[in-house]
Structure formats: C-alpha cells, structure tokens
Image: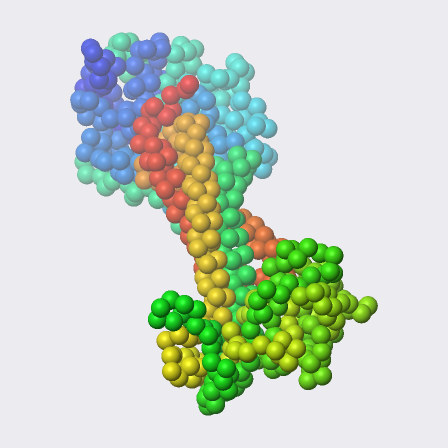
Length: 225
Length: 396
C-alpha cells in the first residue's frame, strides 16, 4: 500500500507575482520503499519535503498520508500525524543542547503522551540500534557530527513512523561519516523502514533504489516510471 | 480506504514542568537575572508589608499595654470664643463618677522658664513647660520613674522638680548621681526624679513638674481620667457634665490612645505608597521577563520548528513558553518572598520589634508574580505558537 500519495500538488506562495514552488507534483511512496528526491537548490525539493511531512499544506491537489487526506485536517490532527506517523532527520540535526543524548532521542516520543521512563527505555533501544549505546549520558556538544546525526536518526525512528523524511542528512558531514550514515539508513530500510531522502547530491541518490528528479517544481524523472 | 486519524498529540501531565524548565536550565544566568527583576519587586512589597505589620504590631502591643481607658479633660472655648477654664472642683466631681478609677489634674504655669542654669538666656525655653501636678498623676498615667523618685507629700512643698523624658534630654540631664539643680523662674529647684517617656501623655514628656503647694496655682488645665475599661465610651460622654455642670459645652474630652491608633493607621497610608513603588518594580520585572521571553522565542526558532516536526500542536508550543514564563516568575516570586521576609526579620531585629510577615503578603507576592508571569508570557507564547513550522525550520 502507499504510505504517501501526492496527486497534482501545487504550492503557491503569495506575492506579486505569486511564486509557484511546486507545479503539479504527483508521487506515490510505497510501504518499505527507499527513495531519493534529487534536485538543485531552488528546485522545490524542500517545499516538497515540507508538504510530504505535513509541515506545510498544498495550495492545490491531494496529499494522502497512510490513507487519509491531509487537506481536511486541522493543526491538531496534522500534529498528530507528525507525532505518530512521520520521523524527520534534518541537515542541521536540531538536537537540544541542554539535554542528554538519551533524552534527545526520547524527544521523538515527546508528544505521544507516554511517561518519561517508557520514552527513555524505547530511546535507549533506538540509540543502541544506531550504535550509540555507549553515549547515552553525553550531551550533543560532546559528540561528532556523524554521531549527532545518528542521535537524530534514533529520534526519528523511535516511534516507529510510517515514513522517515531525511532532509540532506549528510549535508553537514564529512564524506566518511556521510557514507557511514547512509549505510545506517540503508540498514534501516532493509529492516523495513520507509525512507525518503531529499538531497542535491547525485552520489547519495545513486545509492538509493529509487530516484526522483525534481526541477522547477516538477518531477522530470522517476526511476520507478 | 478508511483509516482513522492517529490519536492526538499530547504530553504527559508531569511533562509540562519539564517542558517549561528546559529553556531555563539551558540559559541559567539569563533566567536568574530576569527572575531577579520580579524578585526585587516582590521582595520590596513583602518587606514593606512585613515592616509595617511589624511596627504596627508593636504599636498595637504598646496600645494594649498602655490601655485605651485613659481620657483627658481640657477646657474648651466659651460661647464668645474666649478660652474657658475648668472649675476648681472639676477633679473632685469627676472622681464621684462610678466608672472612674483615677483622676489627676495638672496645669501649666505661664511665663516661667525652666533652664539648666541661670546663665542660660531666659528666651531659651527649649519648649519646656512648667506644670504643677497632683501626686496621683504618675499612677493615673501609669507612668514610671527612670531615675530618682516621683513627688511625695514632702517634696511637693519644696522647690523640687521632676522632669519629663524629653525635658531631661533637652536639659542634658541623664542621671541623678550628683545632686542636680535647675533654674525655675529665677530660683534653684532640685531635680528629684526623671520620668520615662509616656506615649499617651506626650505633653508630660515635655514638662517639668512641681508640686501644687509650691505652685500656688488654681484651676487645672488638664484632668487625666482612668475609666473603667468596660465603660470607656459612656464615661467619655458624661465627663463634660461632670467636669463643668454649668457649662458642659466648654469642656473638651479626648482619648489619647486614639492618637496611637491613628498612628498605626497612618503607617498604613505610607504602606500603600511603598506598595505602589513595589508594584512598579514588579511591573518592570514583568517587562524584563516579557523581553527575555520574546528574545527566547526568536533565538529558539529552530527548537520550535523541531518540536512542531516532532508533533507538537500550536497549543503545546504556546503552553511550553507560557509555562516557562510562569515558572520564571514563580521562582522570582519565591526568591522575592524569601528576600522580603529576611529584610523584615533584619529590620525587626535591629528595631527590637516582633517580626511579622503577614500571610497575605506571602500569598499575594506569589500570586502577583504568577499574574505578572502569565501576562508577560502571553505575547511571546502566542508568537511561538503562531510561528509556522517551515519558517521556524528555515536555517538562518
């Protein structure tokens, strides 16, 4: 089944003249798939990521996530979709400085309503999975870039989301840590996770089973076609 | 395909405090400084209330001790506006009232100066008034002797003088270890006693007292009456007629303890002035918190974006910032209450007063801090909540 389905999605930003960041994008992501969305900066891939992740809404078209149409949902329900169905990995990691690695990973479950000890127990397993079982008590400032991004991945997977959206996950990493991190994403995919990686890096894209090329707000090539 | 919408985002109830404290824990110095603003305001208010209740507790305790049953009878004015006099026999007729426990009379003696020596210019009176006094005066006023003794049937017939508390100070007489004389109207009088201060009869504090036989005076100008404590007001009402049956309208009756009670109340007016100043300080503290919170929202844009990506609703983001502001002001308020209570305690110790921090000051202080925190946090919280996730996540 489709985890995510975009049909003729248009995103228009108001202005004079209005800017069309997406001009009719249709895309379906199947459960268990791993794909790369590739495009130059300004191609609309960040807007696409935001709409796929319900952080933004489409001006036209339909966005279905795990089967329900997001255009009919309000802030509360969209937030619930993000809290329970989507995991984000950002280029800038966005870890909270004042918290331990364990609590940062547990933040993936923060808005689930689970009590702290359960969130921590689940986060510990996720951190062990990404190879950071020995770093639980450290704070982000004590970690390398690659390790920080692994914490962010643990945070993104800790609630077992239907879809993981990774926005330039290797963008702030050196090539060795980047490669190792991509390896981790491939492993998670092999274990059944659905992952969309947004990148401008064609090498990163080349390693993924499916590549979607976006230019000027349109999908111009999709290896699944 | 029919799928149910996922259960809404929510945080565990115990989580709100943690959420609110995250920002404070990571920026401790800034949090303490902005909390300090509120703390100073609250401390000022608590200290003002504490200090004034401590002093009025002291005044009221004094009042209890002095009693509220002392009445003074003085002559008023005649119908034509001239000064009236009290009849000679006024003390005796007053004494016949059932509800009167003690009567004493005194009168000032005009145009007689009391000086340390005959070398002091006559014009230099120091504001000291010479009075004659009944032997019972000290007992009626419930005064006490600081040095020496009160007039007695023997000394009241001789040039002997007892000095009031202020008089003794103005004449520079601190003890009677040496035989001490003062010049009274050109004649040497021996100082036989010094009185302690009498809060209910400050005019006696400023007097030099001699016996009636020496003074050879006539009608009293002040009659002090100790009334039965249970019948003070009825006594007060019948005193004019008792003092001067022919012209009761020419008699003034007053209750000196009213002046003390008025002083306790007058302190209240100062209190509201200082409370106002404290409120201004609190307001400034609140503006400080609002300022810090607004900056915090700007600085933590990416955190807000992250939280929205993690599934926080607008409301939850707003609640987080509001609870942070409340927590900050509450900490400031608690610190302020402690500070104000400490200041009250020190003031009370220094002035030998009972330390009283009214519960209303503690409760009101914390309440005011919370209100300030809520108001200060409302705008920043609203701003944080309205920030769109995509804008918040955009790298600067």
